[in-house]
Image (tube, rainbow, N blue to C red; front, side):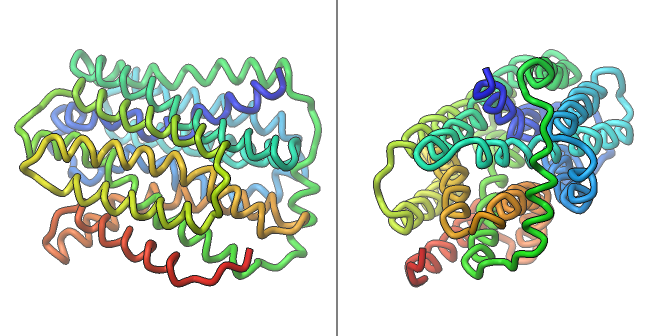
Length: 372
């Protein structure tokens, strides 16, 4: 049950933001005076709290075991996630997303660290692949539920976050009360950053910025491009994206290709994905583009973690994985703000901006030397 308990944490990391994607148009209608950008930020606001958690994690981890941290994180996640069920005050909803984000920071930090610390070599790669698949698997259920309920009442969407009470019970029952995090922090504080890690961390940041153009704009794009205003359709398309992410994550565990080849293929797919999504007159290509974005992310999550482990020494691996997770969530938060600014500056389709960023990453991976 320990393995199942650790993997159950991965169900709730991407779900925190993506679950709201089908409900954004409904929430916009409920708050017509609130700027669209802040409505979109409901998806990504929790992610910035992950960054703040990184600042506190060093001190907290020396005083509390991983189990105690996870119990607190899951309680905050459930409470913050479910609070909007009880209120129609937008300020309180913003506060609830921040509380959810603090819990998310704790869960995301430890979900990967527990895998790295408890498993080795091929088993660790399998666990990272399963975790990546579950990241997307949780999102499948979330967006389908959100698509069904957002049409009835957007408040109902937030009941979804109460599912975090299930891993809360599992952690309480099956995870040992051991303090491994403090050892990780004390050891890694004395270790400098590997040059390759900084490049990988940058890739994780930009890749997440690119991907989150999709959940923050999908509902609006379907309505604007194809005159379809149906949260169930948006939820179904987000579910397709996530299902393909699950498949990609599982396929990665069987991958035998060199990471550089996979990275070139990854950013080629991302470029094609954003290109197809930018075509406003073809629903079929739009759906294909959305599907490719999910498949690409399903490869990216375990691949980046595997790359970090491969270039890190024993003292820095957990610290680097933790920072990598922070880059993912920082990218989520930055995405709507940066893309909106670029959209206003360049006066082009948001998906075209994503295509351009993908092509830059593709070019950098083609020319970079292989040193690990």
